[in-house]
Length: 394
Image: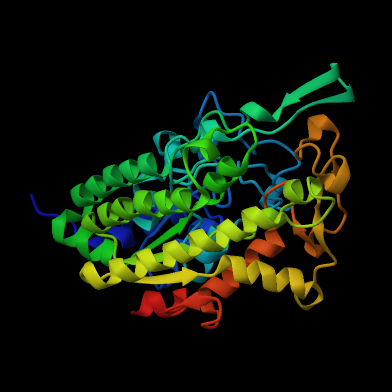
């Protein structure tokens, strides 16, 4: 049986989608795109709703006030008031927002999504398989709710997530689907031109510095960040074996400066988590350089997210921010005593555009857009050895 040529298939899918749904996001597929597909791996910074489909996960964002600035003010599962950096990046390369992989079984546009892009990212996930189970926090009580007292145990919030190893397994299944749809040569060509985004590692570090975790008794900090890098290495190599060639890889941010960390340190950033974030990023950059020298036809853009975040914190007015410490949505000191949940009667800032942080951990839509801009066409100060705009043309 003859295989439908990839571009002919895409044209037919585009026409079908126009008839099916006329939203601006779907119609992006019909515009000229600089890459044919966009595949996203990571944690809650870019989870578009995969955790909505995990029955035992409390690490979810499919409830108000999340999504308050998203189209139709809908909480989709994104840990944000609006779009994530991956959403912004998809728009920049001319593709629709990547749907969550776990939604495909009920998605009428699943066939198209497999080609144009999928997000495997999952809130609470890490490079290491046990990261989700190692995260914990505090137990609190909030008065005045419908139940009079609502007990929120943050210690179990990350009970279920999709670790990176499983995300890569899911990608291997998508690879097989692409081979079936496009043929072996078509899938190889498609994937070699596609963009692969990896943003993960923060939760692994949060887990290590969690006082209730035993990780610090098993590893020194240096051993732990080396373990993170060495665990990531075979996963990138497997993605490469399955056709990935263009990688946009982000370092971890200044995790010691998010509101929940500042709250523990009288509004100042936590020094030790930030120090080891830098050390992990050093190991990650070294890993990428070595992979570049050994794997054929691989190219990458490394995003110095730590430095970009530090730039924003040091010069907030330049980026339109007036609040860099407190969360926009939450309760208590720095709005970081409890998560952003309408049921908790959380407070929400009236101007989300002047806040760096949306909740205890995550950036606002505005901040995500700024970081996506820097990753896409930023200078060599923040992207090495090239930015994503240069990467997709390589």
